Image 1 (cartoon, helix red, strand yellow):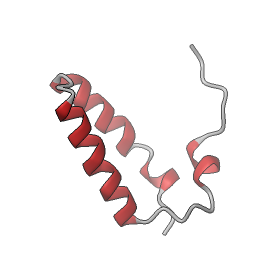
Image 2 (cartoon, helix red, strand yellow):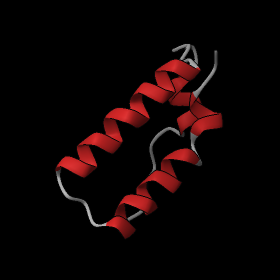
Image 3 (cartoon, helix red, strand yellow):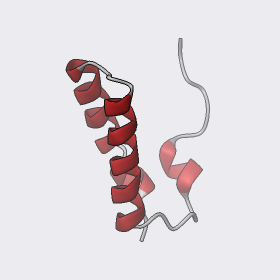
Image 4 (tube, one colour):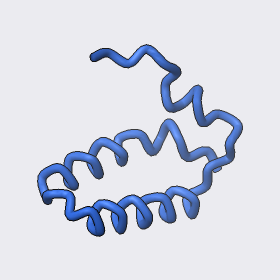
Length: 60
């Protein structure tokens, strides 16, 4: 499957996502994956992928 939608930078432009917004998102995502008992390898993969998007999402 190949994603053909807008990239993260374009999708989040003008939303003024701050460092504190980003941190709160990471906390919620982590808690959710732990609650769902996502296996550690998958958890680590998701976290690594999401962290790779930070520069395209956080603006403020």
